[in-house]
Image (tube, rainbow, N blue to C red; front, top):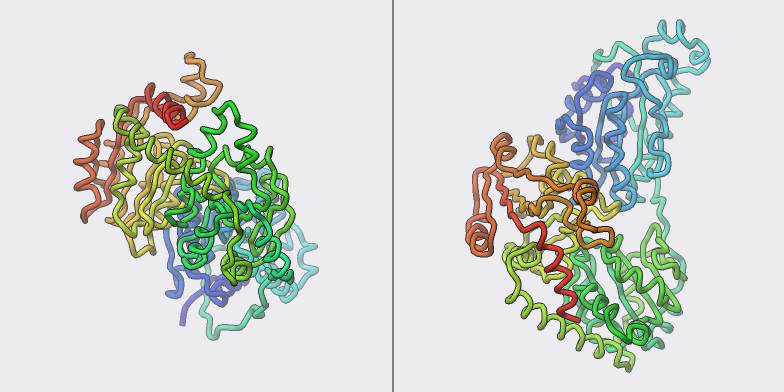
Length: 580
């Protein structure tokens, strides 16, 4: 027989997780969370992970939940530990990732009285959470202390407390499991914290409720009729899981002359007829004397979107000014009005919707796609020519890297310049590509990638920038980094993306406070944490390094690529001039 915490709420929480099949528990050390640590680790049903840094722990759990598409829990002690989860919670909220945040708290009568390691933990994530379950303090445990400090709590029986807590747990877990949103469970404990008791039988605590997310009752016939009638239709796909859409449906879209499909690296959709580099289409239009006519030519009658958030700022600006007559967003749970033109939120999955509106495979006569495919061929030819002419910079390095990533890898991208450079080049179609685009922050990219790699059967590559890497360097402290994990670190000595923004005046203030120029390298960090380290600084060195970088090894590897800080932005902006 297993021993669980003698504190009823701790035992009930652990058993509720078990009933709902939530297996992965990421724990950061503490004392107030001892009842949960002792209970989770005593039961072989759970896979428990120990990660000291709470911010890193939360992103590790987020990456694992992202990869597995199932809830993963993070468990912390009381006080400021909980606040370190916030960046990952916000990312999970905007990326529809079911992160379960479990915080151990002090009893209510010890809040705001000067007790140590104590803050107001209830509802702390308020506007970035699917649900906040604030459990009640058990009254059958440490009753003498409750009688001394807040006797009115004893007006409730333990049965009342259990009933309330179980209802809160049930609501929170169903929202995480079905709506795929993060939830917060705050659970107060009074000392003693380390007492255990045997559980002779496993009670059924929760009911098997049906899904909270309801599919739209809308008829797809009207959508199908409108789709066939429109001569200019744009499909724009944001962050999207691999293999979500049947290839036969993509083939139908690709063959329709009235349809153009804009994808991004994170869309995980591939077809030779699709437009995988949105900015390479829109940037030249912006630089054209007849930009208004060209944009009106590109302007769709119907905009169909699905997937998560879109990287390209150019396509957002274009669609906000040249709005479609109708914008349909396909998502089972929610829709953002990103382009200020949303007319329909269709609550179903994208494949089902596409199958319904494309089922007769009839195409609409139009020259919409043909016109823009000519533009695509033009920029692709010019890109190849430009790459032959320019010196080694971030731009050419990304071209070489993305050509050489082995098939079937999981590719994790950090934010800022990394994910934007990746949009400019083709990737191997078998790659599974992810990026934390919910909040688009540079924090937690390495921790997320390590978490996502844990259950992944294929190797994982993280491409990251220097600021993102050093900001999340505690990720290397995680003890669950697999030997086939790879990091390519683009070190351009600071926040290079700021050099292409309008505020770059070349001043010391700009370099210090915007670009944040730095002279660090990762060599000593890699030695400290037991990772193999390689470096390069030119095209030949990079190509030589990549020949060995992906080969099997006993340890994870980091390849640090040094590029010229003051040249990268000029080459990138020059590319858009060149293709224009």
